[in-house]
Image (cartoon, rainbow, N blue to C red; front, side, top):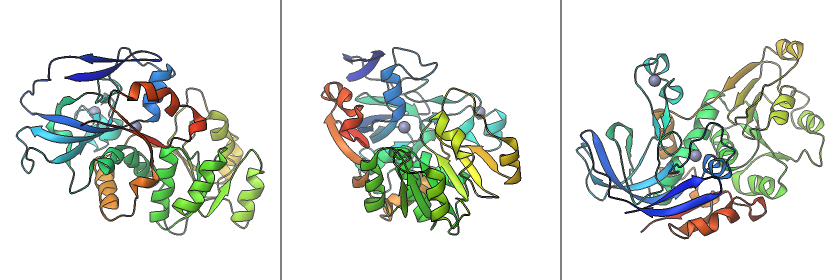
Length: 337
Ligand SMILES: [Zn+2]
Ligand SMILES: [Zn+2]
């Protein structure tokens, strides 16, 4: 079978190897669609910290069930799976927080992933497609990251939510905050994406910090109260540091984006608001199930996310275009036959 490996930064190679052999407790899957994620882009670009090469990328996967012993699944069923392999023993796992397991191994990041014709995975991570198509199933994982962020922020209808950074995760954050009934403000330096958020996703307000004074605009939009929830999906340290001043009194600040440095903020400013700061990592089974429900009921429209496509072998030639910001890629999907 064929697989694509990221041999080193800026180099994908297509190779051949034996079909994987399913062990007890595993399932054999045929990969049908692969979503390309920021993580894959950073791995390819050599900017992902502690990343080891060579590595087979790919963790946003829609697959066909080929072989296994899982009740309720038969050959040909459309499936996806949770790519965060957890230990089941650490304090986080014991408390049901498998998304931040102390020994987590993310499929396609810490271990070889799904840019392959066939894979085997432990059966416990498998999710039945429940009538969703392969496009929808390839979006479940990135949407679950966003759903988890909104759940962490405990977004309610009375909230005003500022989403900073509107790449694929930020767009998901807007979608789920709107589903929760909140008023949503999208912020980004990319005007094309901001307009998209307003016109296609129902963002109530948009702010471009390149041309507008952020604090002034937030005051104007919130009658001086500022947003009750701020969620970062930029992964940019300066943006994160500034955002401590964007919160209302009693506000929550959730970090979905990740950067390598330290954060710095004024303690009195933070304290007087009785602010809450949280990170949001990966997602849990509940988030995956919630996302699948939202896709099934049509609350989330895949066509708003998927902007680019390529076949398995053509993907190598397309990748540099996909990561060029001028091509306005939101989500690129690799398709296998
Ligand atoms: Zn991803
Ligand atoms: Zn664990």
